[in-house]
Image (tube, rainbow, N blue to C red; front, side, top):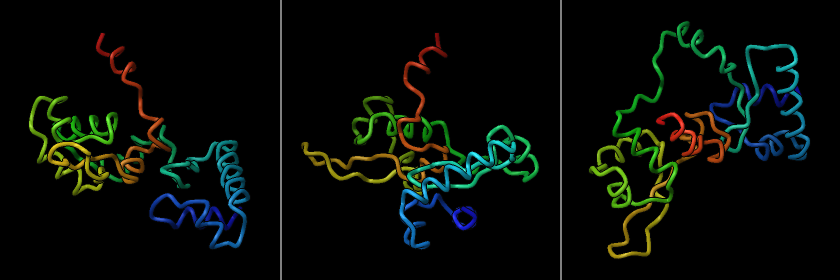
Length: 169
């Protein structure tokens, strides 16, 4: 368990159980069990850290309830500064993926080419192939980096559209 903790700590991004198993010469199931037990230990002692399952891997992170204090201490702004147009485009892609530029235009009602370029540059979206339609437009979807930046285990953790509708009404 200590080795799993050390490797998760030094990893730049979420590290998969498969990779940890290969490095340590263990079974994937025992790596998962060790990471989960480590997470329970952090939780039980009220640690300022947590072990999180994010984007198909494990990551050591500060607790979300300390987010503001940590940000103030580091004197930083959120790492992914995006314009409103980029955020809207990212939301459309996240909920409708795989989606083409014309489909995004239909939903947003405005051109999104520069927002898509920004999202590609920040690696929040990736090309997911071409649609079998006239002109074979490129389809886009969210990336692993999207999951990491937003702290999501997978896309099922996105808030539901109904939750947003409840906020508006």
